[in-house]
Length: 193
Image 1 (cartoon, rainbow, N blue to C red):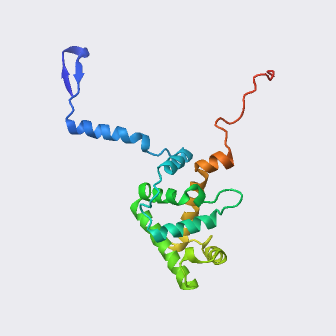
Image 2: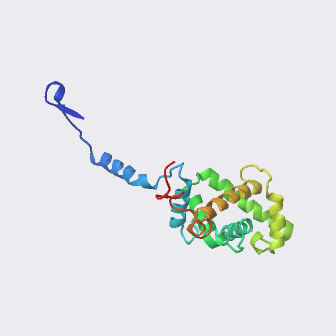
Image 3: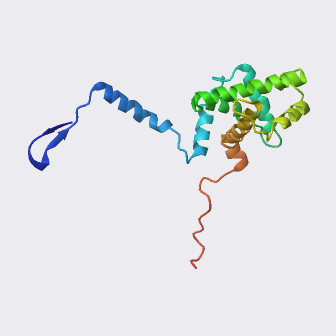
């Protein structure tokens, strides 16, 4: 900053080098993409729109595992199931872009532990098990508190992410919840009381 002139009405001019300008522009361009904590629904919808079709973090086996578990948590009935509305790519996008690295590794380690446990107990990877066996196995994990990186902790976290991804999807918001854009209604012909 450089001051020129005399007295209380001096003109102040700023000098900025090219690197400072680039940093400022980069920071300003990132602002629209930062999450707003009070607006989790909008963030969820943004993540659905930007979810890649190909997994970025999940391996193909983990992708199948997450899909099988998500469909077990929110199965298809007369409404779409979790995988019908894109919950698996949504979770992959969260893992890639929003999870801190240590949480991501713990979550993935827990998924791997969950699948290894299914192989040990039932002689097959979780996605290959029949639906009744999958349900029985998931019941042993549900509601059990586990250490970070355990199968129980990852299953609990997956349930949260599945529900979040499901209810922020466009399909569910539009076709199932049918939330009005502006809640309430205006009745202009109702007399004032």
